[in-house]
Image (cartoon, rainbow, N blue to C red):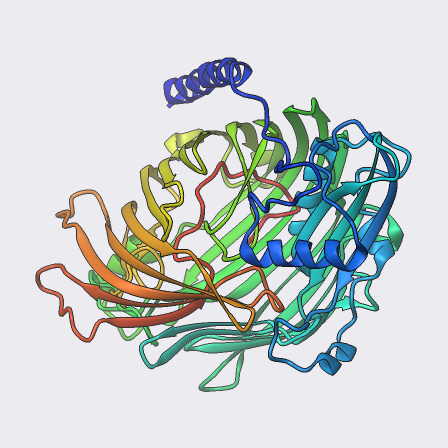
Length: 599
């Protein structure tokens, strides 16, 4: 196993060297859209964003500055738009029920100021940071002519999403609700971006009730804090089944010039884990026992990050983690010992506890491309180009409470290559845990995404992934099916290996009463299986609808109708799914952090 570890690091170090060499030969980052002097050409903006800019320029009698680089910024005007305006069917008086983000909250995010030279890189980074805030939908930073030829003014235009929100997320499979999340909250308390809310989560077996509090700029600083807690109850009996929650506190790398970051987190989850096939608990095929078991997990960690460079970033992290995972069966006394053992072998993850330090290097390029109609509709999206590499070493120390003395490594590499206004991105991830008494665990992941240039009517998205737990001491499994990568199959396929391939044609959005609406046609293929199983590629086709309400979110609402086309499975009536977000996430290098750890 130590040969695999050495080989993994050697390959990634070689890839990093070649990536940096390739980056050094690459073209410089694209600048802002340029048109004729004083004329805004709208290149790179959606119809919605273009109309907002043209309206603001006309109202203020201003002219677009096509060559702002290096000119002195003589003034910055922050424009916070109402959630609902003349583009929307809602009456304007509804805006009084919404707390619009205050101008000082927007200004404190700016990485440029009055009296400073205009730097396109700082303007683009500010726009990316603002677009990353869930309280904002439209974010536009527009250079306009100043009073002298060597001066420039800057308009910072933002539009909030509705702050007093139900925050709901629904997953519907045919006529059954498989998941419902209700998070009634005020997302922008007094216009400060502080969040306070309640939480209700429903699945076919349980519901949970709780609260959430958070602020990303605590007392005006760059420190952020979030607290949440929930109790879980069984829908049939009303009995408590557990709880889950979190506490996070830290300071992120909030700009490319930020040198230090730190964070600490405590997370817990105690519940009954279940795998569903539609609205019913799935049945393990080897034992005939429902797939449900006790789960108890507690995680805590602290990390310190030192960041170097600007265009080529090297983020060096050190820290310590404690991760306890305990799994046990429910009362299975009514089943034979043979069936119980078969269930344990096939479905029950192995309990494990790890306490130890970690060290991590994240090396990546900070050039971005701003694209349209990839994951959302009608709004600009930012994608990092070039190399992205992660090397991580971590340990488990038995003397500190770990169940295994281990040395673990994670080596990940991706490269994003632009293709006109599309791109291609391959990703490789290798995770190896070399432990005492041959209790080793190892995983290889290969993924990729091709985003075609815009074809006039839309884009073609080709995506795929392959997971192989070739050492599976912890008895972890994957599930494929439902409303994501293999649409049309309600019952998931499971195993320690997984392959999935997806082709999706996504149309350009059209504006219907300010809602951005698009369609999709898709082909899905894949399977999950265990070593020794016969591999059969499962396939499905279908149609979908995508809708974005910029007044409420940047995430699309998705409705898909999938039809199996594999022999032995009924194609009709297929399966209908309603959910949020695209069916498969953008692949990328996973960057472990105690501030983003999830249970």
